[in-house]
Length: 125
Image (cartoon, rainbow, N blue to C red; front, side, top):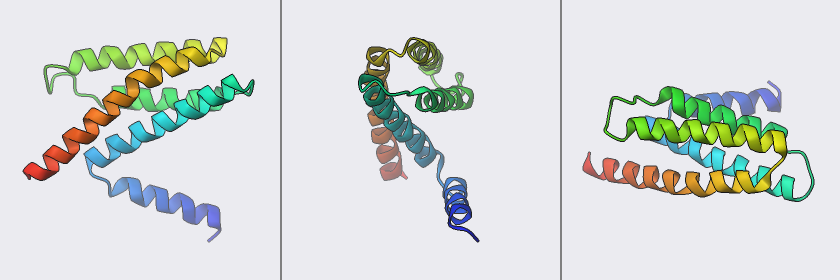
């Protein structure tokens, strides 16, 4: 097997064995990384199209996997994800680093809250 195939298999195996909480946190971590890189690229006059498309894909996955009826805050979180998608599309079209930064400022506390919830849930079980 080539190194690329081994790496792809490792990632695939890792994802399929993650708990839902680990997967959610991994998505958020990668989203923050994409946003960091996209903002830096845009501020440096470099293209960030692929990074922003990947960030949009992550937000779309978070939105589609959200059960809005599972808890009281579900519909509000769905609306926030929709806002993120709109802002990321607009940031990509206009190459606006400030828009990317504003989305990141909202995503990081969400990620941190989910991380804290995962720790508390693990402690409770």
